[in-house]
Image (tube, rainbow, N blue to C red):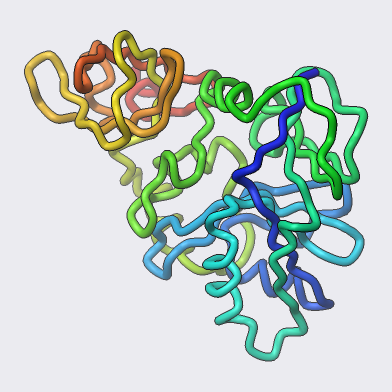
Length: 274
């Protein structure tokens, strides 16, 4: 078992008797079924269906704890607060009360709250604790783990007010509910699925050469622009690539050579047709 503390993660507490109905009308996933010991991966979108933030909604007996990027907690609280109106809901930055960890391999034996990562069984567990736990891995080790699985990492891989959930695998990774009622941004999210409008995807890539900086343009052998680099380390990365260009690999980004490594969980239309 590997356990790492994630210092760039914070916790937004959503409490009050109306918390489930409140979140249900705003976020991409169904939170009404959550009970203590469970979590859902979800996102907050613009009314036009573009990504603003994603987070793990962790259920406790009397609150939802949103495990999110620490830098986004304040803005997330402000945006959610605009819709509170007469709902009996409180929003509080609880980052000083909770330490967020990730575990993978064997199940962790410590932590005040331990929930399976809802995206993939191989991803491991999210562990929240009031005090930092003894760890045997680092945040960089966890980054290598999630890159090996091809999992996107919030603002490192998505663009605020630009990215679409299905480009980032939210469908396959259990980050969106297709059966719940309306939520902010639902119309575009549903339309991109049912009309097959997704032309680009965040794709894991092997990187041969210096790791390209985020935003570096990716080109094919003919020099045509087919995407851009997002996050990465140690020879593995994630790039936003045109689906119809994937069979033209290898690609170039800066001084590096990129080869797509399609994750087993990904469903790509071009490959399904093949």
